[in-house]
Length: 253
Length: 253
DNA sequence: ACCATTCGAACATAACCGATGTTCGTTCGG
DNA sequence: CCGAACGAACATCGGTTATGTTCGAATGGT
Image (cartoon, rainbow over all chains, first blue to last red; front, side, top):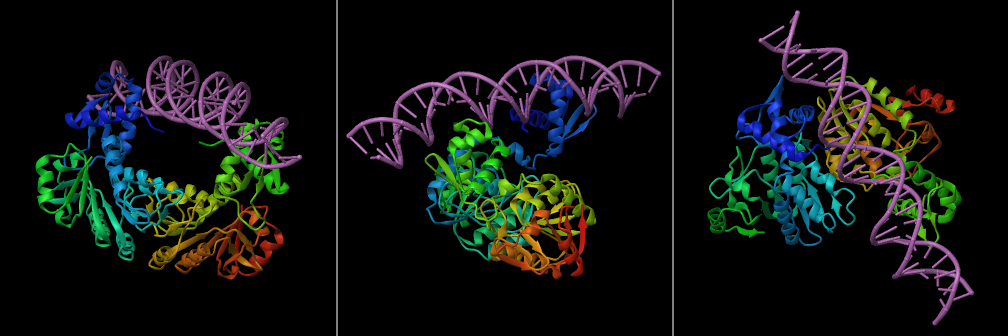
């Protein structure tokens, strides 16, 4: 099922930086055989990370685009787990929570799996974590899952969210700055995030430090709409101060 | 992850038939060690199949109740695959299809995975089969997944189905007889099936031969509402004739 | 309260599965 | 048409999972 994710990450990274790489070059770089490199390239090509040609591969990752879910899932795992644990601590038993898509929110799903609350996940990845949880009530919104991300979007999702009310919305994001607000890469996804926020009394955004460097295409909301941001200790102090100046409670773990 | 499913099946079966079985008896019967039997009983108890007591276990499977999904998934696999292939052949490319819950419908999901159509699955099991399918458009209804079965039910599901229209509804069932119609074990699930049928131009029921012996609690619909039934060659001739007399096209594979 | 029995945690072992490497016939681009 | 790259098929290695064994703890009956 999984090839060495570490090697996949390096291949994707070095190919993105160099634009393109030869099979032989990647084999030399990683110490793996060329056959293994070919198998890796096949996987990455299927994920849309790169394009194969005879002898090598060319990266398809533009600067502004987000890498596929499978790659992001293996990055900064401990930071995400710390953030997720903090979010779980912020939630009270019995609450109803809408849980956004994205890898950090999947970490939150793991952290609340044994809690007693009602959770509405906005991605199938989070949903699959939560099925079979003993004390948790799981409710699905409708919608169309975006490939790879498996984030639910579309009118069905927004209609479902409009007919529900939550104590807390846990929102993930691609970019978060006091100046530009919460941003995402997908317009439909941003609309869903807004719908989730509209139906929630309290909005908690989760963002590891890397998110403060980025601003993505789709604006979700200005930071003034957030009640709280949970991030890690590597978050830039200036941004943290700006968030707090905007009235947002910031937790760094 | 999986212990020998074959042994689990035998344990569940013999315990149901005898009412209760001792650990030593099951060990002698299966040839496995008592420790393995205990581990198996733990699994089956977690699935609600039986109740453990010191020295043995007592079956919780009443005649009328359906065994848990994990057990049914390993029964009559080839018949389900044949039925599923036939259903897939009945569907045209580009169709929109609502796919009911149940193990036979999961087999249908596998059979249509590489087709080009729009599918709305009514269970997460089917959904997980279909995610990542290359040419298939996947759309989710909302709803609450029933534990184990992962069938979506509730007002959210029915509302989602009411806002959609399908060329074909593929309906699974627990019991199917010309006299009592299509029946299921769960009332909420039966309501969802009806909602799916209301939104579909054509209704195809799938039922392996064992379904003709059963009648379950919840009536879904009389057979007159069905356009077609796909079953296997072991279906009792009298029932097949009765279905055809009611105007239903029956395919046996 | 006692004792035989069962239970289950912990370790040992075996069966299995997935990832990687190697070989070699096939395919591709120049 | 040729050399290089590709990928199917098989071999091998390593890790994981299922199963068995042991032994101290827990349990129920008397």
